[in-house]
Image (cartoon, rainbow, N blue to C red; front, side):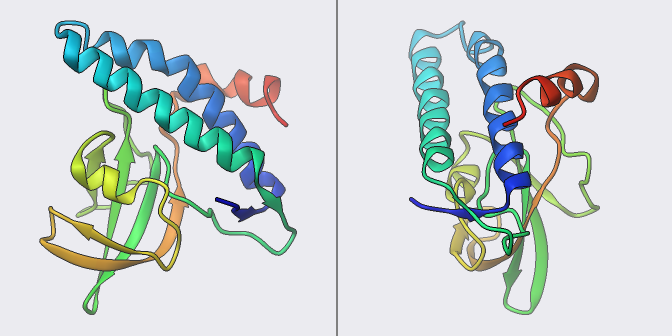
Length: 161
């Protein structure tokens, strides 16, 4: 998958990848009570990281690109369902928050069927969500912060591309 993005979005995604790498152990430890759940979540996190690495490695940098190109952990999609718009976000499996969450927004935990339906989708893609019992189109993607600001702020500068 080749995705066109701005340099700023590229840097955001690179920093996001570093953050998810750092959080992976914490996420999978929360599944340690059950071997099958643990190995399943480890595979899920590794697949997410691998997919995101592939997108970053094959990114097309463009000055004209300004909007976030794909749904990732910590992003929100503005979706049109018939003539109604709603926001749906994805947080990490072991919790998290979206700082930009609006009243009425649906938040899906990574690994859930609806989060899986949204993950790595692009603006204009059609998406079917169980929570709404139907399909809609992604009108816009917003990158929010799933990061704990006091922990993540130094990493932004340290790992900037």
